[in-house]
Length: 388
Image (cartoon, rainbow, N blue to C red; front, side, top):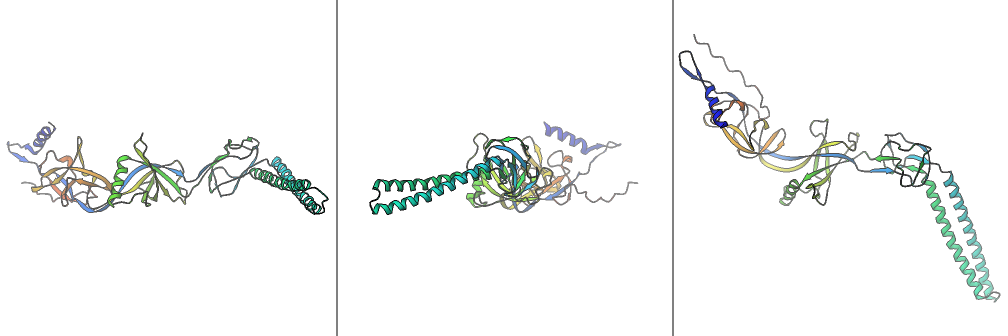
């Protein structure tokens, strides 16, 4: 029905009445055409992802006490080992000193026990003491040595607790807000003092669907593209406010299973971030290296028209007539789209002026332009002299 209406409209436009009842045909409409581009291309598949820190930690205390002071600028960069917080250490210092004193006393008892044992060994030769007394001296020396080990362990633990009152950065990164202020009581393993995130490099994580995963597997088996599990395939990254994909990275990880609920698999790229452009949580656009094609056919996306669930283009056929060709379109590459089927090299595709074509076979006046400049204006035709 639509075709009939379009044909009637076209006839109405082509045939016009003149004053004496004579009819004349309208000139063919001007259209821009370009030959199908044929060249080797590399496909890039696009995904949506987000930025994650490679190292991220919640900084919690390992001992209980009152927070004494904060030693970093909130939101600023800190170095590995830099002091972030201190907890009131006076009680822990006293405990450490007492434990050290106990260890020294235990060491002194060891020296005394060894002297008693040596004396007993000399007296046993003269039968001045019994064998039982010698055994008792030997056991007392062994117990004294064990007491030293226990006392030294307690002293080391007390020193560790004292050291835990000084909370330092486990790695280089950007520290967050100090969630607890000085004077508050903090609990070991429970109170979150702040968070720390590494900055350079960063992860960009994204998910691919099952069809994409299967396609990559097939490409790897055919030798057309190595699996990202085996090699670090290149990726391109763009942020929400950026044009294109100006940042380069490489694949770092592909998960070992698909999520059966979503039918997707998680993947991860690693991207340098020396200038701190990427912040954890940012949305990122990802381009992953896809398939390389030799002699791919490309056209301008503007030439592609839609008829319900079909896509088609017009080409210039014999006698400059517009011919419809149903096509299957592939990915977008370098501003053009790949044509998987429907066209052949050398076809002249109409890339501007398609709205002037009302039915297949309609004559057109083609003007050749570059494929990437569909809106280029054709040169003005010479004006015909007016009839006298």
